[in-house]
Length: 122
Length: 108
Image (cartoon, rainbow over all chains, first blue to last red; front, side):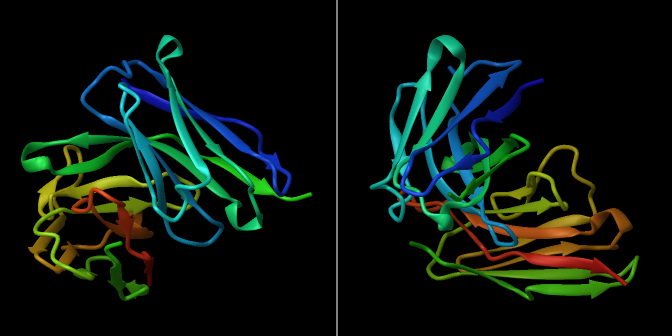
């Protein structure tokens, strides 16, 4: 059974860099799936941050593109998120997720990590 | 970006009621529409993909319909365990994937 688990600091200071990792267990990163990051500010809805393929191709939300970098570590079977110059508005639960593709290019998030809460505060 | 608008933002219904949630896209997304259920303190869970395909393991009381810009998630007979917030998400745009604002379902 494939599982995803996020890890990283729960507290980040304003203007610093938020770094999170998503470890994939029970399966390989070398699949036809894209691997995504999604966040949810307290009491609010879901925001897609971006996604990465094992070939290291990436897609980013235009609203965050200037501050986000996604990467993969194939040897460790994990992928990572870096978000620079954080502010209080970046406080959220961060989820990693697998985006599965079906026929006719349909795609959906079929597997999620449990989420990790990150607070931006001095 | 393609904007997704859900209505209502919240609803309260009794066990056994038929519940309908609507999602509208700001432009046509054909059938590139997914529905998720998020229970308090948990990660979202996929219910419906491609507008009307039921994810394996999801109870048959959940169904989805629609195409173009207007979509519906229906719970045919509300159960206590359906207490959750439901989100639609479009997967049509290759530039940005976007979610609706969510519909919180409460049990009377």
